[in-house]
Image (cartoon, rainbow, N blue to C red; front, top):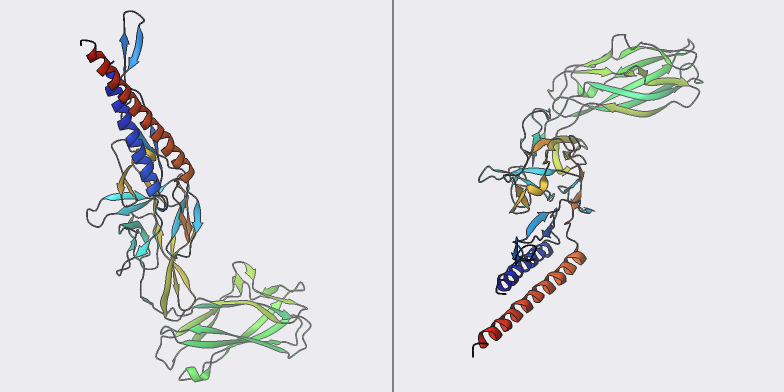
Length: 411
């Protein structure tokens, strides 16, 4: 009879723990990337009452086991440039700046400190790869991600330019068509290079001339001239892709910049960029590979975990890559606070790599993964655990009354 005291007390303790877990789940209802805990109860060993096959009476319930449920949370689109959500398995890899310990998180609300280090919301440094010298080597070991906060990107001198255009096959001899393109020198100063096409007397031929403004140079640049020949189908037949490139050399720039050698690319791989059909002469696209000096405008995270830097000249460059860790048994991880997890003795070693590879999930930029706490389920559990606690208090009361009756038998 008196084992019912300890049995009921073990149940009171277990249900009290369960209510604590529910309370923690509800407290983290709005914590990004939080994974709810589930309670697992188990009974204690039973004793045999009487000889042979006598009745078995249990000793109550053990301390509940909490199991972290790593289910996918809802992904909410946000306005934060540095927000990211993990879809699928995996964790962000973080390093605590104080202890140097490596921890793991699903919280994707990131920030940047004054030195440009990419941090979690609670101050741990996000691990991944940073562009060095224009190269992003994701085969190298992971390290702190540093973004170019407040930097001025140096200018890039133009080396190549191109026009995608059609020249009117029905044009009369001597008709001209011209287009200009902005190019940049080594100091980031812009200049205008002009290409002019003139219909030749010979069928299917156009003469071209590449010119550079006289006002931008100490000595006028001699135009580069030549002839384009088309076949009867309107396709460029000469120059061939294997012929020497057409180059406009520019020396003696007034601003003191280095000389330019502007290469006109007539082909996109093996495909000619210029045609001659019976349609009005028109440019459909043009491009060049130079850029002026530019200020950093903003830094954001794109899909796949790429760190994108946008500059005032319109360029958007990849300057970093977020790494992800995959743990085969994530339920063995221990919550260590600040929305982070640490390895336990039962945890498999994390496999770190690029998102979307090796079984790792993907990353969506400009979004946050919500907590997996289901408020309806938690309130239901709260009621069930409360009823369990109340029922076992009744067992204690009943056992106490029986004990008093037993003691009174001697009177």
